[in-house]
Image (cartoon, rainbow, N blue to C red; front, side):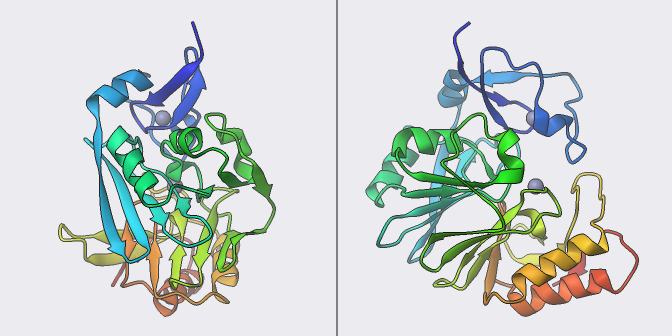
Length: 271
Ligand SMILES: [Zn+2]
Ligand SMILES: [Zn+2]
């Protein structure tokens, strides 16, 4: 059988394979295994059954989503800027119309993601917008077989002036955040989980090693989050799933301080 791309029907993780034997993301302790066994969707099937949406969040920021929901149902963020657009995280799949819209907004010069739960169909963006720079923290390279990382990095990587990736670890060893100094935003990966109501208002903030199983982070992991983001100025956080203008630097640091002041455990702090 020829090599092709397949999405895990449970979590949406893409693999370039001929017959994936399993899904490394679902097999990991942070996710649940599928109740009824493995099912892998060929790209042609996903393309025939999914569309998507683009939503403008700010002058320089767009959010791309896939419908119906695929896998973890993440959001791909696109920062539109002179000198080359930045895609951080990716939608689970992009229809032709979504790719055409990204093209109309200026394409993509830089591709990065916080960790595997934000990869989505990053492979599609690389295929379409080659030769974009693809930056992934080196500890997570083993999960990037669906695309080609062109810029593995250590603790920090300046993607473009004012846009810096910082390894934060914790949830995943290679987890990184993107600090957008111009927009005053922290694309924080799953450093924070933000609960939101049906209208998109943020109601609670928490941090986890594993969200589904409520496995907490250790104090050293929380402290590393804190040490990394404390020097950064931001008025909003964006996870691979939520845009939270309610969470600025003070709120984020207070949440981490609360966790450091007690025994490890997952606690959802009301916002
Ligand atoms: Zn999976
Ligand atoms: Zn995650």
